[in-house]
Amino acid sequence: MNARTEIPHPVDASDTCPQGMDMAEWQSRVDLAACYRLVAHFGMSDLIYNHITARIPGTEDILINPYGLMYEEITASSLVKIDLEGRILANPDPAYGINPAGYVVHSAVHAARPDVGCVIHTHTRAGMAVSAMRCGLLPLAQTSMRFHRITYHDYESVALDLDERARLAQDLGQENAMILRNHGLLAAGPTVAQAFNTLYWLELACRVQVDACGSGQELSMPPEAVIAKTHHLYQPEARRPYGELEWPAMLRMLNRRDPGYRQ
Image (tube, one colour):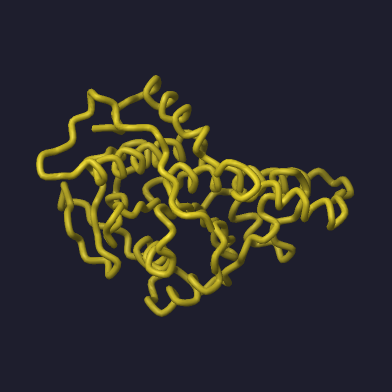
């Protein structure tokens, strides 16, 4: 996969980086808080559950949501900083800890993939539905063909066992999207922007499949050669990495709706 790509969207001048925090961490916090708000806006959150993590550039430390806040409440300053062993390094509100299951899933990817800057895990209705289908994700539409090489991880119960991390990382391999069978979806990327884009389109592909399968009509799929060609055209080497163009527009939308995520 390509090296981490920096997205040219600096924090607004009105945002003040907290004393003692470098701008790289603050930018990561603002982007991650924005991602939480966007996942909620597009109907992909699950009350206070699930997680999105971001690696602080130049470190092994990651940011994660405080366990107890809804996604629409997440702000840049409320995020908890932990290391890859799950130890809390900075927590603005000790009343909230972190969800151990979130640490297990996300630390598995961050530890195995230094190229990954952000990991998103969801329990959406469509994602869980497709995760329960033996056929997996079908190439029913152009969007679905982007994920023609998607990987799968078999369900092992609630992700609390540390030894599952090795199997999670092995099953993901070098891909950026994985279906956790009987569980949900996982998306990763070099940046928050790219990971969000991957999740958005993976979720859409799942919704398309649920709708198509529920229509009662016979399903139509293109020839394998067309699917492979389309998949290739979706890859970074064939086009600008996903998220770069969309992310500033996503931030502008959030700023119009509620700029509080930057606090």
